[in-house]
Length: 112
Image (cartoon, rainbow, N blue to C red; front, side, top):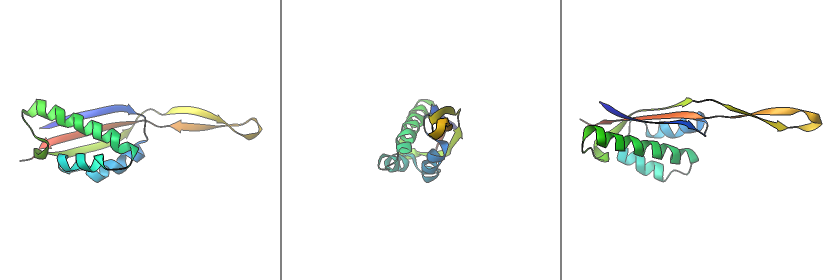
């Protein structure tokens, strides 16, 4: 059994989030939270909140599950809708800027 936490429409590119998720995938939750706390990237803050939410969901679902007894079984960042904006360029032209969003899902499972 696993406990899930999802953040949808996070205003960060999924490519940037996947770098952080690859570093913590299949890790112990306690170690992952420590690693995220000291990682100097914006995506680490977003992933930290989702992981903390997954731990809280696991404590409700499994009873008194401590973070040292949990591990990350699944961590994915899928692409959300893209906001399209335009920036003025020279000679009356305009170029498109894509502001990407991501859906972050983290699942934690109790270690056996």
